[in-house]
Length: 310
Image (cartoon, rainbow, N blue to C red):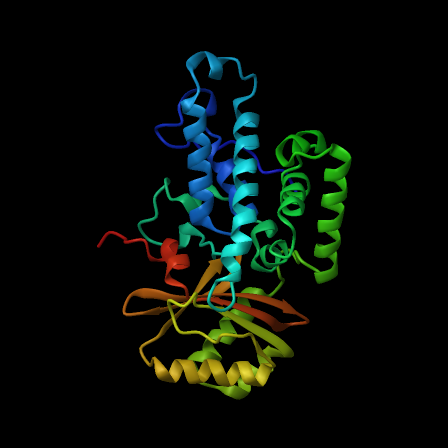
């Protein structure tokens, strides 16, 4: 992986001066740490608020405003990760990271769209984000900052409040978790074609074709958050998944399926009456779908339902 750069983004009108251009990098960092675009935006906004709360002399005394903002954003995310664990214990059903669209695929998307501020690469793939959810907050911060953004452990130590050696151990532990699951898999060869065949079989209600595209031990996880209907537990097995998907489509005959990029990889979007109701991310191996993550919680689909000009 390569360290995410800071160029190419002028930020918002309030980000003038030495912090201009930092917002894209900070939002990308916060999204990878939190798995939520909404929370990432809030964390970065809070970091900027703290920057502007400093006196002019205080800001002038900071040699590297970007490093300062990174430290503050990292600490805010670390605190949020600690509280998020308790919130997710109370979450209704399965929790899936918030899916991220490729805004270039949507008409009316402007340069100030928050999702446009995140570089889409393997470190935002759904499979990778799901593995990040298994880490402790300190592991996640140390791993993302070092392995994804290439920050030295001396700087990470300041953020997590531990020694550089301890941060190195945290990142190593996180790396083992990633290695044990095989994520991130990188761009999947042939995934777009496979997703297209999957959409066509789903639209046709062809259970046999769907079973042929799914691995026998495939798993589908849905996230409704108690705000949209979804299966409360993962559906296991290719045939069970195929029958469930066809049954769901029969219940909503006006459902429209669209091929869209989800977290940097080919995925599907289901729309009903012009509203995105499901975003599905896929993982595959040996030419078959092995995992489906279906997000139905409308609060997590906000970036997918941005009004567009008529």
